[in-house]
Image 1: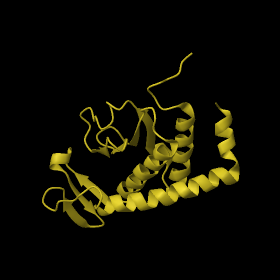
Image 2: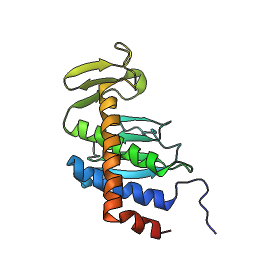
Image 3: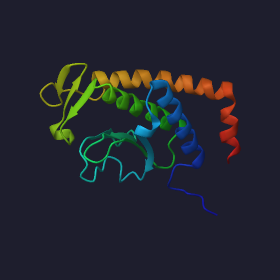
Image 4: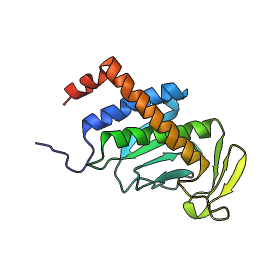
Amino acid sequence: MDYRIFTMNDICKKRATKAFRYFCDNLGIDCSKVVLRFVDPSELNDNDGVENVYGDTETMACVEMPSGRRKRYYVSINNRDGVSGDMVVESVAHELVHVKQHMDKRLVCYGTDDCDMSYEFDGVKHNTFVNHVDYFTAPWEIEARVDSRKMVYDFNCYMRESGSYRVIKKLV
């Protein structure tokens, strides 16, 4: 028997994938422009030389921006075991809000790592060290947290109303 002790279970991944499509649709994001992937914790935020990787490995998700030959956004979710399905879905929503902010050019990031990072959000420049922009008080993060919670609530209502949760549950 394969218990997959160290990775997220398939039901959680299927729910996150369904949420990903639902959120993209509601945000007006073309799903073909964004890749959702589940990665080993050691790979999360490991950009392999690719610029513009933003995220928080403790909260389990990050967004990689298009650069060079890569034309799509990557939303990477920590594939660790023991993570609640709701946390995964909320992380997907949160990161997709950031993708939308970037696509709309409301959030522009400069630099390649946390030590040399500056941002422009809605036309206002922020430097992580000069302005002491904190993750929890940064305006783009506040917007992502507020919007993602509402998106998750709407997604859960959709799942209940459409009976979709039963379909995912039967896959076990």
